[in-house]
Length: 353
Image (cartoon, rainbow, N blue to C red; front, side, top):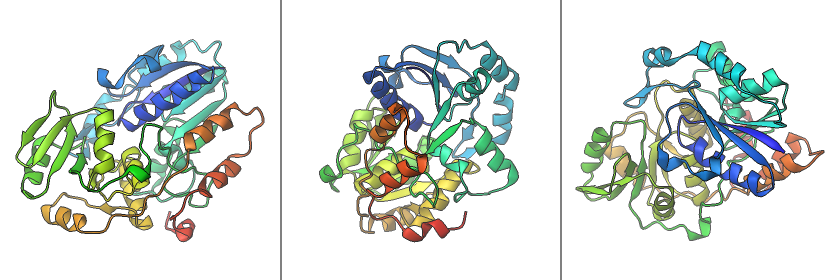
């Protein structure tokens, strides 16, 4: 099957998940063309797995020091160019579009009358689930940003809908390998690095390892700055005392899978992250803070680590589902996967949405 695969590059979770899925689709004999849209992607995130690929501007939000800037975001919106990019793409020969919340491929599918699947966390919002600042505008944006025929949404609970558990990728080690004797792992890509380093430096007795945009490892007191590298990051995640991060979906899911303490700060005015924070609080899965504070970090580290969630192999199940000519309903797929997850709150279907 010839597949057009769209990847939204705002946040690196989309890229990591898409790379694994594209590699698996190709291994199963499918031909895949990747279309990236959003902020420019650093070369370290790209390799031959994505080839052939196309890059377009698409749509994204602009964050400054941990909060979304509406003015900067509006200045970057080029809707006419988006329409031109959709119309200019030659979709002949493609049989399926898969979108990781990518707006151009989603609209190419509609225009070319191709079947489309949406794979990713944000497709869970096709259903009525906990959502921060729910209003007609936010709900419409979340549902219409990259619309597809079949949304395969991922979340930390099904909330009574055909939503799938988090997709833990094959390179993430087993929870059986997890330890609690390493530095606190920090990934705050939407925050000021100087502010983060200064804050963590006040906790002199605690070792922190911060993954950020540096060319080489650098020690600043009790804080070690590390260049972005998936392999070393996962090695540190396995042995981390805890994880401090913004409230994206992928890293939090990996930490919960391994049974790590999570202290998370949502990007202000970013609906997905604010909604994730609300869900984590309601489900009791992580500690949410609106501002980073040394005392709160110290208290959080004194709390006991959670039990590993041990999410099942959602990626393999989704690939089998795609490859089955007359596949089961999405509800059956969801029920089958959640039956393999222990420790979820059975009353979460009644949480405020």
